[in-house]
Length: 448
Image (cartoon, rainbow, N blue to C red; front, side, top):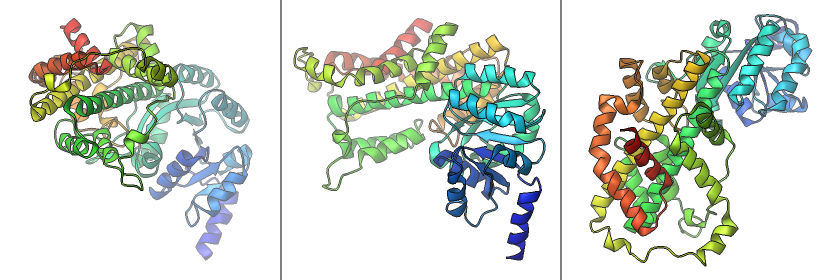
């Protein structure tokens, strides 16, 4: 009790906090608790100051987390150089929060935007704050609420002078693959947020590919949800081993309170937060054919036209062919789908890294592609064994022009090619839309 009382008294009088986190929604709270677990003293702050007291009295009770009720109080409690991490809504809220805190900070202090900001905004803030003497960092954070609490993938970029002062905190709280942290310095200005944006675009692509595989297993092969769950479980033991394949298997076998499969009861419309769209816009801006992510974005747009699709289904007809006409051996065709999914996934990541490489050249960021693959290897939504193969490819040849030209991926595509073509042809004949599978194959044929 004596130590605790002394600690709290000292926290009011002396700069003891290693970092401040502004924004106490679930992501912010979980990131603070993660930092606390790793031995860092965190000062919590929120625009609505009552949330600070609520957090300290509940989730943070019994920890060394301290709070502040004003920017001035927060600044006084921070060690120099001050490190302030923002987890607020992207856009004007970030600029507003920065403007309010600047009068209480000094040159050399570090401001970190860990929200989902657009990289062009981060470029602007990096320049504006740099001219005023502040060190600005824009960091991608992936892994959602659970990742924030137990180990996210972190992609920091901005003022390189800031990295030595935030490296220990970031690499300690990040996810680990073996002994390696899924966090490293990405590059200058908006590089961190750009890499996070492409990560999110690839995530759109992965989910679209899985959705198409599901449609093929259901409508071409005729499997029920338990059978499809078993297929995804099996796929997760091999080359497709990943978080998204794993949770797809779990979703497919999930039952409601009546024992019925839940998935068919969910409305078939998909929303989007905008990062997939941003990736597609960047691809057009810099002239890189990131076709699969583009199709994934458009598939979401099409799905949102629910009433139009319902009306069209009563007017427009599809092919009269039946799945039995094309799928003679179910087990064999399931393997064809697996190979088509794997080949399409390779193309999607190849396109994503093409875009990263081009934008890196444009801004002279000198990005380390192998390090980026490692950052995505754990903690984030697209984490997979597959990213280890990408890391190896770029580590062996940092100047690799395209992942498809790496011997491992060249061989993988060659082994999958016949199955890939069979799946796309069969889907076309049966009227099953596979825009991502098909555009990946079209890109491959165009590229070769």
